[in-house]
Length: 336
Image (cartoon, rainbow, N blue to C red):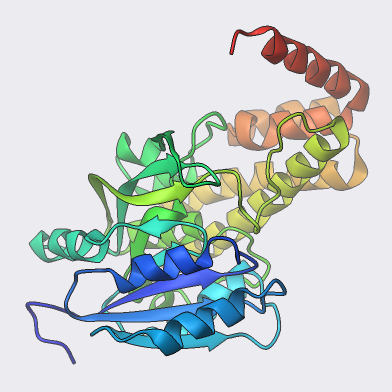
């Protein structure tokens, strides 16, 4: 058990097929200045040599941090991989980092300063991020709504603006209570950050640090289909379908967690989101919809942007293709 002035923190580097970037991500973990740090490097059965790079980095480390390496024997996927690292982590806060991003040296320290300063210690703390490209060059700041909204369970569950990210999991730290109080995440989850943050909001709350502590590598994700420059219509549809399926499992997880919390307002918000996500998933599978059903679900749920508009487009491929082509022509006509 750590002393109260410097509680034990676990910084987890989650790796899957990121050989090009993983050495830099691990080096950033080793460079953390927080004095009581456990570094857990966990590879989800990579096939590109990432696990060998991680093993070499751990073997050659001579610093003062406690370092552990976990290499899964088979690929678990995001939900189960996150479940496993929470089981392995021993810290009072768990800082998550991806194998293609860079945590600045003061990340763990600043998070814990914020955590210790709170009378009611939050169960999730987010920081700001600078966007970098695949070569590590800065390309702006990452804008998320979490920095501007009150992070209540209802506002997080009900967020419905597809034009702006709600939050960025690469900037997150959680207490073990988000697992201990609600149980493991559903293994089919392809997105862990929103459900874990909703859980935190149902417990001790969510705090936001308006400070850049992560360099976030844009559009290189191996977990989600990347948006590619000049991508064709088929790939665009595949990405949209993936988002609809991911949104369904997120909504299902949030509804289960809200019910465990027994908060009527949270349960109602989660039901509305799940209604829209379930309808969208059905449309994604059948590629058709009832206009009356579409309008009725939209009226009941209010989740037009994130679930129902994509479902509508998938149900009418000719209209969707036409709008996709128009959008591409507009973007090409804009001055660079």
